[in-house]
Image (cartoon, rainbow, N blue to C red; front, top):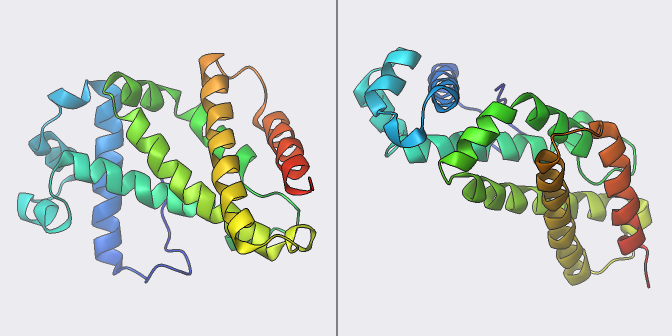
Length: 195
């Protein structure tokens, strides 16, 4: 996974960023090769070519590594539209996120088998709710919303987006991500513009 600091995150030293990326990539690869419970920190260290002291300078354990890596990914993905300067009325990068998930189905399946998927979805929901709330505040079509309604709609829409994702994954991802992006935004704007 490619991770770059967002404007709201301080820039990380290149060496630290490179180390965290190697560790994150290692855990993602290992999760796809064997059950999460069977993965050892030593295997992660060997795969990433990182020392034990360096690992523990950044993470408590392999669970912390997995969640931290996911947290960074969701933080970047949820703010993709704002960071890219997109001028559309899309509220969330559904197309981009679903396309990424479709490429990572083995990883997602491994997370589900390890009972880690619910933690990931909870983390994603928080990030996407904040991203959607920021988009609602920035888009002229939604500026009429008060802060409380904007926050409530953002939570509901993030939940709807992730529900759509799990439904889509359960069906084997037959619909293209762009089609689901359109469906999500049709639903989203009908809720935003309702009296």
